[in-house]
Amino acid sequence: MYNKLQYISQGNTIEEQLYNIHQALDAGCDWVQMRFKNQTTKDTFALAEAAKFLCEEYLANFIINDNLYLAQQIAADGVHLGLTDMNIAEARSILGSTKIIGGTANTFEDIKNHIKNGCDYIGLGPFQFTKTKEKLSPVLGLSGYVAIIEKMKNSNLKTPVYAIGGITLNDINPLMETGIHGIAVSGMITNSDQKKKLIQQLNEKLYANVIV
Ligand SMILES: Cc1ncc(COP(=O)(O)OP(=O)(O)O)c(N)n1
Ligand SMILES: Cc1nc(C(=O)O)sc1CCOP(=O)(O)O
Ligand SMILES: [Mg+2]
Image 1 (cartoon, protein in one colour):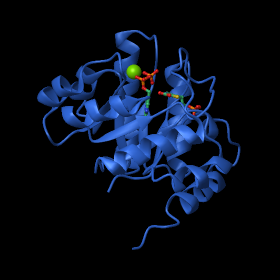
Image 2 (cartoon, protein in one colour):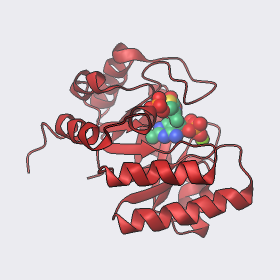
Image 3 (cartoon, protein in one colour):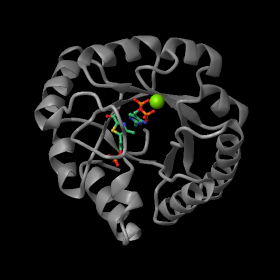
Image 4 (cartoon, rainbow, N blue to C red):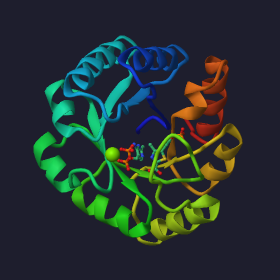
């Protein structure tokens, strides 16, 4: 079972990114997606190597946003691909069956396509407006998740879905009640000055109904 909390990194420099990733790991995050936009190949590679090293130290999963070839080059655990990134079927044929491939969705159609193409999980969003990403797809709100997850259940589609986009602590319970698997968050963790406490609270909510 995939962990229910994915931290998406933030920062405009390698140093800021590594600081934020380290803080998130130290506070208990066990899944990191490196998201470092509009940077040089050299800097992106340098960050990826350093972040992968950190994640290994903390036994955390480490995936890379957008860049499949970078994920392959540094032997990351996987990649997250958006609707305008490489097709998931092509990505699967390159990475093979052992690597994690996540795909962005905004509609039930997106989800069906990704599942047909072999993705491991879906990032479904945005839940609400967020400043973290530009050019957002239409906001889904809770009712959007309810409708899409219902359609997945009716079609017997069981691929884990992560809610994403402007999620705060109070959103977790209603979101989890829709039947999603977990959440992917950036700002909530990056901007928290009590990260350990926050991640404990998040995990309590995310794993509340998991029987061990
Ligand atoms: C878990 C997760 N879900 C969705 C996204 C968004 O990916 P994408 O649409 O490619 O947008 P960018 O992150 O590349 O701006 C994600 N990164 N992670
Ligand atoms: C990277 C990303 N993708 C989204 C989507 O809807 O596809 S929303 C988003 C930003 C997530 O960060 P935050 O938790 O700070 O809102
Ligand atoms: Mg992308």
